[in-house]
Amino acid sequence: QLFNMVTVSDSTNLVCGGIAGCISRTVVSPLERLKILYQVQYVALAGGAAQGGSDKYKGMVQSLQKIYSEEGWRGFFRGNGANCIRVFPYVGIQFLFFERYKNWVLQANLLGGKDGPAGKRLNPMQKLLVGALSGTTSVVFTYPLDFARARLTAQGGVSQTAYRGILHVLSDSYRTSGIGVWFKGMVPTLLGVAPYVGVNYLVYESLKELVPVAPGEKPSPTWLAMCGAIAGTTGQTVSYPMDLLRRRFQVLTPSGVSMYSSVWDGISTIVRKEGLLGLYKGFGPNFIKVVPTIAVMFWTNDMLLRVAEKWKL
Image (cartoon, rainbow, N blue to C red):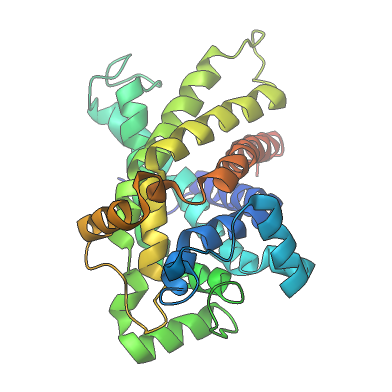
């Protein structure tokens, strides 16, 4: 039943989730780009300034000023088009499969549902499981787009490549390194996305149940945004080191090779050369970014679903 043909309800979840994802990512695009530049400059500039301990991008204000002086206002949104092309199916598939996995878990009564097999509410462990499964499913379907987005976002700042778009990234990387390069960093991505999305849904859905609501009414948009913000902050804190690691797998050193041979090699090398805090490079702008991102995403998705329900779309 999980992979039956897409229904009208599935299409609504896919489209509403996709639009919500694109809007939320565009709102915070400057901070998203800054986070990726922080994450990958040590790799992309290896043998240059980063090797000597002087990173190109340091404080948040200095970095944003540098982007603007070198690339203009468009620099804040470099890679955002590719990101939206990736995010639409990524978030849409996430919301679609959350509902499908939710129904499957409740019917099978996995992990002991609160109301038994016929219940409609997930317990905390079920929410964590369903969120993790929907997150990993969306990664499997869209990872090459994430790979392309990372390379487009890094160029101009710490990478001197000149990709023209997603198709150019994918075709050029395939020609030089084979199809396997499209999936570089997928293992740490899955290891990071499972707890990230799982915790997001666990916290968001749990907080939604606690929101004060009048009989027959739905939670207010303000409460939904607050629930999303708390959920995003919690999930990102748990999974950030794996997010940093996947970006470094996706971006090559100047010599054209990956800096790490495995997930464990990446973690141990970062801790040895950059210290324990090296695992959280870029966490500052990301922390500021993730609050509005997840808040806007969950809020927009819920509002769009209400419109769809009202107009029977």
